[in-house]
Length: 375
Image 1 (cartoon, rainbow, N blue to C red):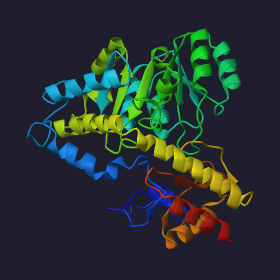
Image 2: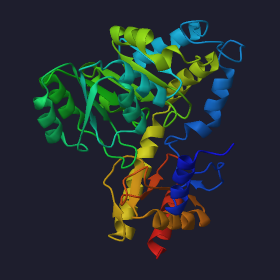
Image 3: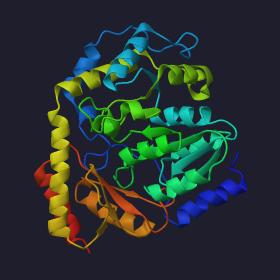
């Protein structure tokens, strides 16, 4: 049976504006695309440590955490993460998407209001959409706009949702100011640390740990599928917050739990990172090298966003144009992906270049030289 006509129309529009997505396998090009900032997903020593870790021999968890899927391993790892993130408690989820969906569809109730940065990730927006609360976006990283909207609220509880590092531009929120604003307006601050997990903080606890603000934030979300090189996510907060989510968060309650191997991999990855702080230092050095070389060699050839994070972007307006440049870079041996509209706003299409601890100076220079020579 074929798709309904309206769905066929939507697919045809994607084809016509050159924004149709398709699945591809991993290539053998030089990686300037993945979120594996520290190279942990490919680290052979970590892989062996995970294989040798003591876990049960079951292949799956057999059910949700509230039924048959809980284990001593799961509880132990959540206690370990609570120490790692300096929180009273944590709760592990299958993915960062599920974690955001749980927090935002569960905590804000009817007549509450959620204020969220306009460039928030799709998982944040989808969680908000499932909530019964009212919602309003504020201009990206514009705290004047946020506070103006907070002053106008007259009923219900208030939630403010931000990301510590934004995934398309690599720019960072003013977390200290956000904490003060939230306190002033008695708002519950929720911070998604996805692209800061592992990269920032002595223990990999993100921007909040770097600034010593863990106790000033109502809810923190950590993702392990990026710099940590594994899979899953965790929410860190008070004992009451975690207890509430266990009882009311539908994406947690009705999801089959991960197997013990999943929990063991999380613990192994953080222990490995604790023992190898040079990986974070190397990622920072290589990012700095990229920005220096790009400023020197590219000059004003391309419009770029300002970022000190491994996420670096080059704005190329138009799906056709950015696809063409990405194909050229791939032909030259560099895995750089185009970010198309509607993933970003029309006119904000871009190359999203990710710098890693394992990218060499020669590789970075060759990429920049290729961009400089392109016409």
